[in-house]
Length: 95
Image 1 (cartoon, rainbow, N blue to C red):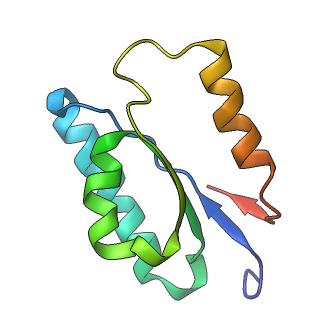
Image 2: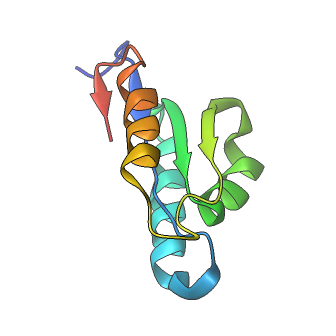
């Protein structure tokens, strides 16, 4: 059913290691999705910790990465840039 559909995976992680368990869990889940052929897709990475971990295993799938996204509280303008990038992608499913 999901074969042939274009997918976009957007893992959001912190920029610092203060949320180690959350970051590890997000990265682990994304790696599991990447290993599953039925759930492969492009990656838009938000946050440094996810970028650092996923670049090693999925560099070819990363279409854009937002660095320093959460070093300070995000502004409306920053969120709009991320949203526009997501919405500009022709995909069938966003995860």
